[in-house]
Image (cartoon, rainbow, N blue to C red):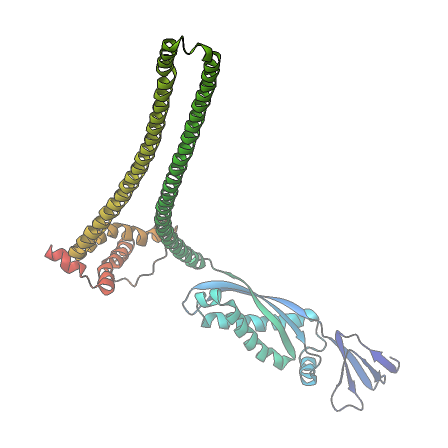
Length: 426
């Protein structure tokens, strides 16, 4: 070996020992001057090592055997001189596989120790806590060897006895039960809201119908008044036209008579009797029929006006009677519903405890079915017995009946009604 500078990459460290050094010179990721023969230079890897820590069939604090697999990242600390010196004392000259084996055995031992101090539920539900404990305990031990635990993660938990599967089935049953309860409560709330909405809809409909009826009534009254006014004006116009026509005819006749008088003025003396006869004829054939026709037209117009007025008044009276009848029907229906609700409230008040007992007796089979429903969904049940008391199906049935028997106590604490006392009294 010739003398000169020796370099190394950032993932390794140089260890120079020999002449001029009371303790080895540690150079992580750099260079050093080395004298041949009187000085020795060695290299140690600073690479991160990934370890799969297997702990098969370890008994937890409850005595349940489980298997755990963890993933750890470890490396020799090159930035801390004391830790790097300790790592050189422990691993200098060893292969990386030998260093991994030593770190793996140490981690596996600590992992098994932590598993033995915790329950299956703690390890399964709080993996972060388990990983933290293994990390802290293993770090305090490996740091003495110059190794740093970069990270530790719990990868997998297994058991051959089906303990974890049973936990999952129990939790699944609880979730299904809560879902059924939530669905029933949601359905109840939806029905209540539907009833309230229907009540509001009917009230709005009745109010709208009332407003429509009022508007219809006002329209019909105004229309009748307008019709009366129109018919009156029309009759007056027709009567005025006929009257004017009669006057015109009368003037024409008078002019004709004046012409006759002028033509026969020379014959007055000799035809006096003829003139008188003609005057009587004129009186009988023209004037009297004209007056009779005028009187007839006046009476017809008056009768027609009276008929229109009477029809309008009759129609207005019919609308008023119909509105009063509809209002009376609505009021009678509301009064009947109010009386029915009052009677129902009195019945509940008089038979409160009896009604609640009857409802409870009807509900008990449903309560028992809901309590036993999770058990009916379980595919496998593991039971631990001390040898005393019932086991098997008898114990499960006893548990269900015990839960159902506590229902009267819950009812008594909530409502103050003693179901057992009421049943014995009956």
